[in-house]
Image (cartoon, rainbow, N blue to C red):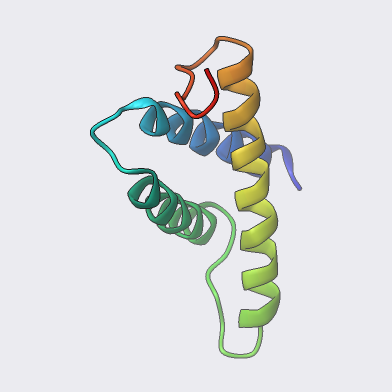
Length: 88
């Protein structure tokens, strides 16, 4: 992952952690929103899918998304973003 991709994943993860903290957003909606945000950010900042390379693109989006979710978890645990109420 390039440094730009790491910054983008960190930004997405930070935003997702804040969204997960709001009780008015159902968890399933935040998870669906996370998938959409991750795919859109990857398409804008990294590359768009092509007919020949969509499988590699999808694999890379999954890795990007997992990085973003890891940042969200660390941000919440470190007190840098709001914590979710899933585990008191």
